[in-house]
Amino acid sequence: MSVLKKPRFKRASVKTFSFFLIFSAIVWVLVQFSKTYTQLIEIPVNYINTPLDKSISDERPKHVDLQLQDNGFNIYYYKIFNPQLNVDLSKAKETDEDLVYTLQNHLAEIEEQLKIDFENSRIIQEEIIVPFQFKKEKMLKVIPNIAVNYAVGFSADNPVKLTPDSVKVSGPEKIIDSLVSVPTRSISLNKVNTNLNGTIAIDTSGFGQLSFYENSVRYAQEVEKYTEGSVEIAIEVVNVPDNFNLAYFPKTVIIYYQVNLKQFENVSSADFRVVCNYENVNQGDDYMIAQIVEKPGFINNIRLNERRIQFVIKR
Image 1 (cartoon, rainbow, N blue to C red):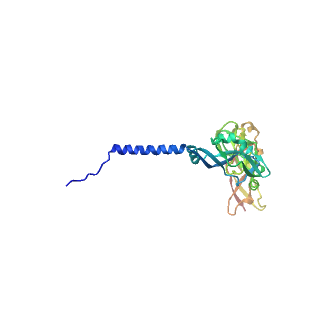
Image 2: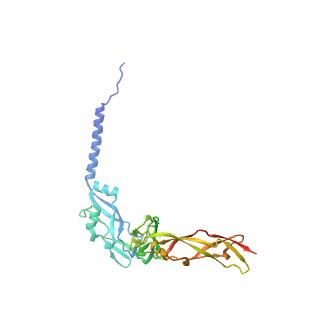
Image 3: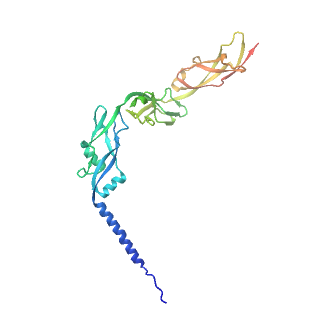
């Protein structure tokens, strides 16, 4: 009895067949993509250089329609990568309520941006009409967000100064009316022993609907050599009832302070006054709190060696 054998294909034949099949498919795709097609493509619009005194409406056009006549490769590129058109509103014509950007007047710029040839393609719209509202303008005080840590023996008499100390902004009235100030960005300056002088950006985060006429300010501060001084001051006790015989200890306190080295000799104990107010004593307490009520305006980092002043009432 004879046995039928299944026909077998040689591996080389299968590989050859697969190669020609794939090659034929590639050739077919290349042929199809090489043909010229006409396709309508939506091109997203990005608006730049909006006039600072205007706020454009959310109803503005989001895209333009490009009728593209080109080979399949270029059309596929536009479909996949979807390039956007930057519309410069500083070049638009202003009407009562709209900014009108006439596309015909900017064909060279558009060709450069989109990498197209208007001989075979065109944008359906003739112009882009962007509704706007006038913004309200206001001056906002700039608040420095600058942490200064001085080197040992250095400090400053005056706070950091900003120039300008206020900036003009514009935006929707309901937002503008709620603002009085705007901060700078946060920076920390450590071991400072020389005068400060630099530029810092205004922190515009959270103010996306506002336009800032200035985006940075200059900061400056004179840094001086400082030294520590001390004076011993007699304590004054006020508002003690007439029928009380009050005894307290200590009778004096020492005030420590920092002062500009140039003004060290100008500090005198007569410039200070330390007071304990008996009216502020809580019931049951046997101490008063000493407070510095007078001091020279040019010293800083003031502290007392003792704030709690013990007392007894003699009968």
